[in-house]
Length: 200
Image 1 (cartoon, helix red, strand yellow):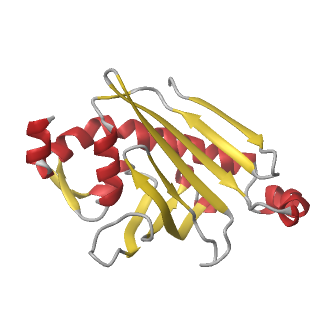
Image 2: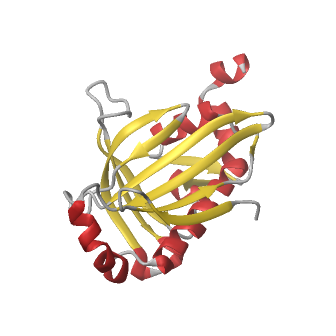
């Protein structure tokens, strides 16, 4: 309820939807960077063994996996993630993409979903900032690509591919999943990273 949201057309013509989330209490940037490197698998949650991606958003999330890892098996810039989800529980707003990872560290996460496996129609930017009590978390979804061609095609994209109702569904979905972090991530991080947790 405390999130601030908005949308705008950027100077280069792309469309940006953004969210400044309420303070994530008890969640650190280290936890968030670790989470996005460990999205696969099951966890114990509320006495049950559940898929961790579904715990993050039980109603919208369908599947996540790492389509491509780095040579050493880790996840970071150069890897790619496959995401399947429905925004706002709406079948019209299916997300089924492979997204190359551009950045992933304690300051944020950037990945670039490819529609049809090649079309760079979107960019996801997450920012993490440590503040007293937790983390200030900002999300940004940018639709389009730099260049004159998108300026020409933007009206068609907004009408047929990604209109403001679609943008509102993304905002609602993202507020819900980020709000869920407080419920499971600190405990999960402590369980799977006992040495780091003792140091912290």
